[in-house]
Image 1 (cartoon, rainbow, N blue to C red):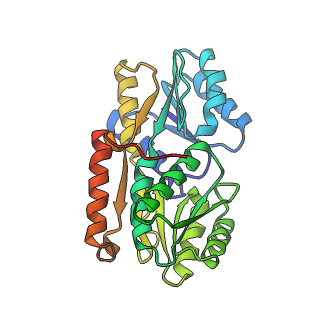
Image 2: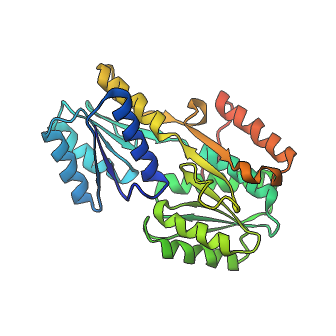
Length: 294
């Protein structure tokens, strides 16, 4: 199996979680694995072809931006299964995985809306991709479900790896009154944690991986995608010859997207808010509630 990531696997977030999935496949299925960090669409296509020509069984392009390249290359290597995350394209040997990240983002919004003292929240993304925008909309909706007049500031860094820019965006939002920030910016998001640690009484939410340990004194929780579980499910089907390409949707109902509250700050979240989160989480798992995404 091969994995293409748009950033470094050391980001402790989106790419790091994917790499942990690659390692789980190696350990569980005794697979030969490879990982390449790619920067440009030309590299996406070049490496998809490289792995197809080498006879890899499964190649995952980790991100919405890999869809076009995968759709072009997949027909050339019909014996290789190509999968893109945050994508919905399908073909004879091509499938997309959509993560309902908005499920966990809505739950984080409930906590943020209940705990803000300033009435102003912030969201900071790497780039303005549709999955990121929809998760921020869900976060805002969750916050307004308990605090109807809350204000939400939105910023995009323009990339996923500039830690200094992430910190600057967070400091700017804090100066405008944001006392809780939800970031989804991969390595650049580490700068958001730095800014919040320097803030006075401000908090942050992690994204994609469990980031509660990065700044445990100011991190309320993390919206986690269990990428190792999701990747292993797909790899096992490919390994056993049972994989049939189709749009794959994974969220709270499949226990792939979850909100992990930081146990170090559990006593700061009022019991009534934890109860509200548990109630909505149950509805998400039963499929009786869908967070707004616009």
